[in-house]
Image (cartoon, rainbow, N blue to C red; front, side, top):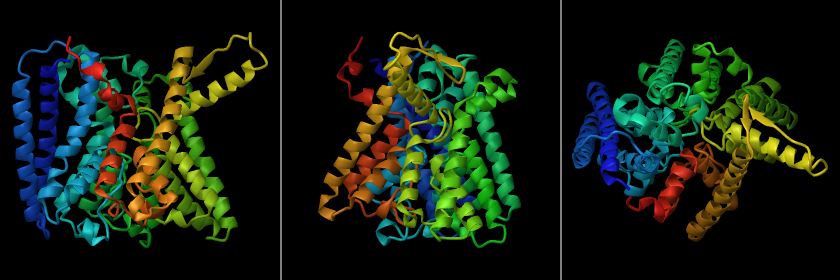
Amino acid sequence: MNFRILSKFLGALLLLVSIAMAACGLFAKLDVTEGNEAAASALFLSAVIVATLGGVMMLCGIGKIERVPRREGIVVVGLGWLLCGLVGSLPYLLGEPKLDLADAFFESVSGFTTSGSTVMGSDPLAGGDIESWPRGILMWRAVTQWLGGMGILVLFVALLSYLGLGSKSLFCNESSFQTGEASTARIRDTAMLLWKIYVCISIVCAIGLKLMGLTTYNAIAHTFTVVSTAGFSPHNDSIGYYMDWGNGWLIELWLGLFMVLCSINFVLWAVILRKRWKRLRDEEEGKLFVMICIVAVLALTFGLAGSHHDGFFTSLRHCFFTLASLASTTGYATVDYAKWPVFAIVLIAVVMCIGGCSGSTAGGMKVSRFIVFLKTARLEIVKAFRPNQVFRMHVNGNAMGDAERAQTVGFVALYAFIIIASCFLVALFESVNGIDFITVFGSVIATFTNTGPGFGEVGPSGNFAHLLPVTKVFLALLMILGRLELYAVLVLFMPSLWRRY
């Protein structure tokens, strides 16, 4: 392991985080509202600490680096997200009202991983209700999600041209961006194009919200957390705060549209800009994701209307927004879906686990893997009575060999195993509190799929503040594991990774 490379790039990553902190500090300084003076001081102090640490690490790694080997690249990704979570907790620790260490780490990691799970709420032990926090701290909370949406390490690749060949390792390990798509052009140029698309979508979303009557602060804060499919809101009632507005339905429709758009592979938007229509025709993943959303919305709407919860159109409104929010793993809420019938809870859990498309800001297992898993299952069933037939599998127009199919099935199996093992550990940690199974399962699914709210006591009307510190830290690590799609984190526990060469 070349520790000089790790030190240099992790230090540069910290410098990027410190710039974001300083920008939020400047906002808090200029925004003269209650508590923002102290928030500005906390943010500026945090920025100085992080910048100093980053500068020292870069000095330790001084020297020309021609390329980043794959091993160092994957370690930069795994440690980079953990480090961002740690330093991102400083404003919560230094600002007022303060969070304790476990809560601050949980909130910070939830931001960067775009999970949206929170310990900030009506519980006084969690620092009071969300709206009592200074707007500077809440803006930092939203900015962490916006950076984490496209992936702060993709921004890292886009800005630092000297990564050379190693940029491919960072780019592809940071998230589920497809290697085949990314290799059609230089990785740095592709990363920069994706960030330009991300910024343009953010601008359009913010302008729309502003025209609908939201203040500039609320429009920006919600834009940062909707295009990143993250879900932090500066209101206690989340998007339910706007339900009683005359155009509340239009705000929900606008946000729902952007949640769905940002859950589709961003490389696909680049394909459209480059007018590669054949690739667009071959797209399976995006089409299936939209179909899943439509079918789920209709099933829930007829189910709720049939069980006399609400009228048809009211049910349609609630189901559309809830499904768009949870299928995209955003986690916004307008109603407490935990009070819906059991069939609705099961359906919601399924779409949360599937998540959005690969290469999007959404979390979950990803629709592309779901497609490969279903096609592999069908193939094996057909092989049972046609063992000698030669089969060819294509996904999004790309041929899938036996190795790719085995890798996907292995990922799905490991994904399920981690959920089961995590449920056991959370139940063990919280055994002294008498936690129920629904809350255990909900907390694991919500954090591992990066959705935010779960079920039971951690549902849309609750939060994670009442859990033990050890549980919060474990769930925070689970967020990173889900955000990086397992392998970039799990390899850090392999002793052979750290051997010198």
